[in-house]
Length: 260
Image (cartoon, rainbow, N blue to C red; front, side, top):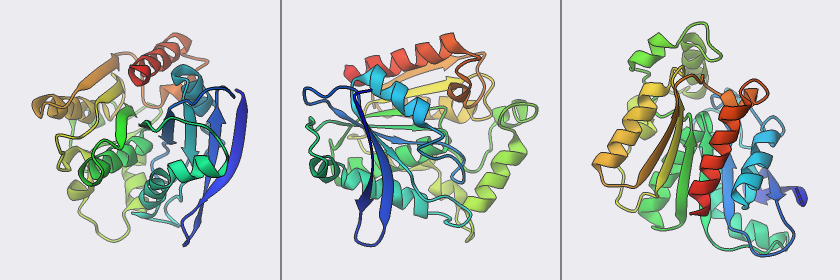
């Protein structure tokens, strides 16, 4: 990695920590905003540093990793608002650091970060069509209702179990929000929704909602690619030393999609 910069996005109301990864000091790379997972109440740029480094190397892009506020101290929609603010200010952020770049933005999120990424891709595709060039979702959380067979099928004895997911969502939604209405899977999508790559695992409780979102994009004529690993559980990129081949294949697929 050529350079790593810890800085902040100042919204005027609050300062949002970010970490910028520059894979090379020459040229004008395109840009990724990465929103980490953790069920909206765990994770950080430090925890996800290895993933962000891999994404920068795989894509050749500058990666801006967002250290958004976490529940339960900061429930819905605090973290989502932080991620939105970083995306809105990403060009001025890079300008302030005197980092040359090309104005082409990919949004990448894993797990809970995939929920934020999908929600924000839907928002920006309506409000600023074309602003998000590509969307990459890595075993994303897309349906807060959890009404899918895979939640029960894969919800015990795995890295992520059903009881933990439900507890996460109880901490995140503190004001009786309509969980279906806030679920990315059911949001209205415009025809300007960005081409999307979905990465899923067969042993993941979230498997079925991942497949459902792919099917929805296909039905609505939105370009989508789906890379599925039948033997992988949720968050397998955090276990890279245990599943090196699958992790490598995932980053290669992401790199190919983003560079396309």
